[in-house]
Structure formats: C-alpha cells, structure tokens
Length: 165
Image: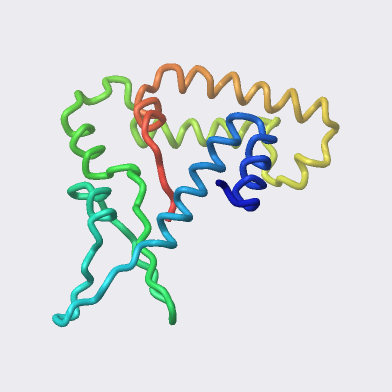
C-alpha cells in the first residue's frame, strides 16, 4: 500500500505536462541515486568507486573535480571543440585559392574606414535615427553575406560546439 507522500507525489507529477513529467522523473531518479550511494576510502587512501557508478564510466571520459570543506564533486566534462583535431583537419585540406592576402585584408579595412556610412563611435551610431541605422546595417549585411557565402571555413566551425572556459 503506497504511503500518502507517494500518492501526493504521483498527483503532483500527473498534473504536469507530459514532457515535464519525464524531466521530473529523471531528476528524482538522479537525486535518489546520488543520495543512496556511498564511496569508501580504503586503507591505502584510495577511493573505491561503487559498481553502480563504475558501470556508468566510459574510457577516456574526463571529469572536473571540485573540492570543498565537506564535499568532493566529480562533474563530467562535456565534449567540446577539439583544437588538435581541427588543426589536423585544416592541415589536411587544400589551401583556399581565393584566400585573402594580408594586403587585401588591409585594403578592405581601409575601404570600410573611408566609407562615409562608417561611424568610428558606437555612441554616434546610436544617436542616428533608427531608419538610418537600419539602412547602414542592411548595407553592411549585404557586403558580409557575399563574403560568408564564398568562405567555407566558418561553416566547418559552425558544425562543432565551442565552449568558453
């Protein structure tokens, strides 16, 4: 016979939309698992990892370890952008025949600076009427659209997760 606490919990969960029910159940499982597992430090000073945790570990997974006065927390490092793999892929690709030289890049910068629609100050730009700001941004977007449609390197970067640390 279920207790009244369990009946209350079931009622609460059933009142939620189904996708949220699944999330709540996952959080409860996680909480119950976390609160019922005990790890022991053996006589050699080594942490013995319980089987129920060990079965969840995969070779080459990485964890950050946070130590406080009364706890040690292991948190899985999410797979992020692998710079070494990116460098290997870049080295293996053929060079871009249309790659801009440093001189061409400098000339583009000079052109942007000469453009009367270019404002050196964000404050000046923000003081312009909204319609004029929109026109300037639309022109700049058109220029960049062509550049990004021709440049494929950014699309390779877009396909991976980048993580800021």
